[in-house]
Length: 142
Image (cartoon, rainbow, N blue to C red; front, side, top):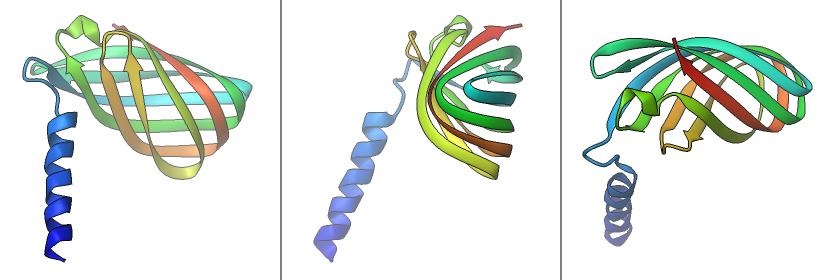
């Protein structure tokens, strides 16, 4: 039992060390409301706020998904943007591969862009949707 506890503690420390952002990268808090409709291919739009270095920055989200997808939903998501070196790193194209379904359900998503920014969001989705697709998201600062 003691050996197992030590292994778990070591694994937890290793995980925190490996996945912690570097000291020169900043984190930001993200809030977004996203509406999506789909039948095979889907499209969505949303608005959000990034809190970065003590200031709020409004942004617009445009999304497109291709694959098996049907339904409509609205999501209210919150989370973090990691590996931000400057505000302009946040803007751009993000990708995510996912499988999921929602009927007033909670869920999460992780998005990455070519500048190394990782956005992790979670929250509540309402609607009826089933999706198994490749999603592309474009974020534009207002």
